[in-house]
Length: 90
Image 1 (cartoon, rainbow, N blue to C red):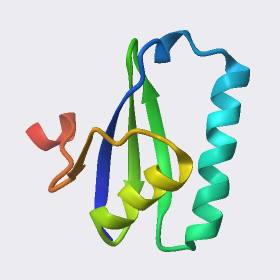
Image 2 (image 1 turned 30 degrees about the horizontal axis):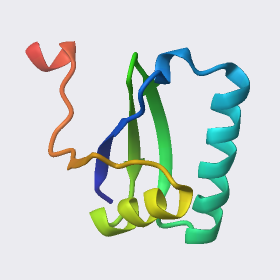
Image 3 (image 1 turned 135 degrees about the vertical axis):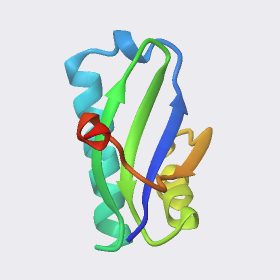
């Protein structure tokens, strides 16, 4: 199943409180439950003004539907073609 990285532009994302992040996470999980088992949230990285999310889904359309239903921006959705890490150099 394809993996995607979603870039969400959210001004002040890095200043969101733990309670705010919990609420966002709960909203996301609720939408995921409604969309079914084909889409899975792996993890997200919160930076100053963006959140980068990693999802597994059959297609980009389902990723965008999750964003629409959750009220989240999905400024860019990129399919991961390959994963590399330090062991790739060996």
